[in-house]
Image 1 (cartoon, rainbow over the protein chains, first blue to last red):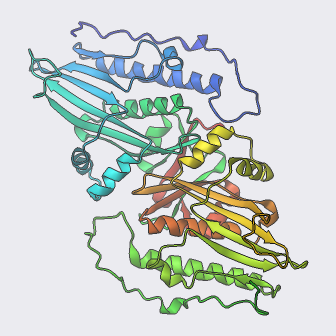
Image 2 (image 1 turned 90 degrees about the vertical axis):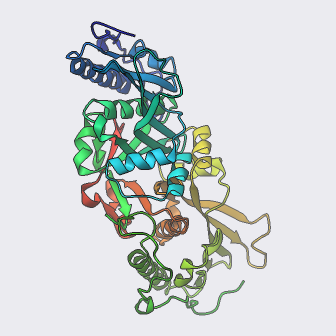
Amino acid sequence: MQTSSPALCAIVPVDSFSNHLPYPSTFSFGLPTGNRKLKLSRLQAGFWESIRSGLIKNNSTQVIEQTSSSQEDEEPLPEEFVLVEKTLPDGTIEQIIFSSGAEVDVYDLQALCDKVGWPRRPLSKLAAALRNSYMVATLHSIKKSAGEELTEPNNEKKLIGMARATSDHAFNATIWDVLVDPSYQGQGLGKALIEKLIRALLQRDIGNISLFADSKVVEFYRNLGFEADPEGIKGMFWYPRF
Amino acid sequence: MQTSSSPALCAIVPVDCVSNHLPYPYPYPSTFSFGLSTGSRKLKLSRLQAGFWESIRSGQNNSNSTQVIEPTSSSQEDEEPLPEEFVLVEKTLPDGTIEQIIFSSGAEVDVYDLQALCDKVGWPRRPLSKLAAALRNSYMVATLHSIKKSAGEELTEPNNEKKLIGMARATSDHAFNATIWDVLVDPSYQGQGLGKALIEKLISALLQRDIGNISLFADSKVVEFYRNLGFEADPEGIKGMFWYPRF
């Protein structure tokens, strides 16, 4: 899929969103449609703008976005899709694949955690944590040499990012373990990971999305729409061992 | 089940003799920061419980007919699993009725009872189907029930009043992290240390399942309550964050 100029994504102008609320005002759970959808669209418009402008330098990068933002409300996010595709100088094509339903090889995850410098955790516990997460979102890189198909088994498929969420499947979700391979950082992939994870959670009507952010990444999450200590609500840990 | 004329003495192990001896070899390298760090936190847990039971006992010295029934001693929690259900408090009311407060970590919760309790504490209504799903998909649901029996009858008889008076639940990945949600105690039963008992037992049960990271989000008004139970806000600058909160 070669392009000579970046593909234009069909972003619906934010002005056309209505503020019509289908729920009675006392109903404070579930999706408040007007305000947050508007913010989600603005978030995504801003996000894709930054991805596109960052990629304009490189004419061989194509951003593949699902048609338009307005469709999120109607069509479910596909479980797996190509986030970014680029052609490297040597002719190799690399695709970054987002998935919310992929099997994660616990050894691959362990290796990725090592790469970002996290302390080792028992593999059996890692496996249990993955198994018992409500959602596990991953980024994989698939590379193929010029002339081959990307689906051929001898092509390199590498885990380069992950984020997972626990949930009660009804009201609350908490995001844990967000990581992106250091060689792939700085390209907006972490933002994409979280943004897609949030979208998938919202589509399942999980209205309360939370996380605990190290002081160094509070700004990162603020830029994605997260707010620290809203109305004085404090995140607390029992006898933390930090 | 008659109570004695003076409050039963609970077998609380004096904190001085809780040793710092780690009962089993600690096989993990020092870089392993997950899992139970036995020395410090167990000591804190024992002190927490000793302090807690002290406050329960001293608060009840006024009434000679209140008996605190603790599963043997705190030190046994390390070896024996917390029973799934046990009597937390038993008291004889002025009219001779006996009331037991039962803690359970495995009870079925009637979603209508829960809705009624949420109404009592003034929480906004939530759809019953979602409440049911939330209970079903929580890693642990801890409850407090009150059972009353008139003088002369058995407590297990079906016509005795069994009422849901408290709940707390936790979501978890079953390995590393748990987050506590929806903590509530019937207003008529507040102020007696039952909320503290609920959280304290929930924490014990989670620790016994080797869930080392126990978190929650506390309204500003209850931050102190949880601090007194061992929770710390923003440790090392870690901030709790919500996506576009609708508060």
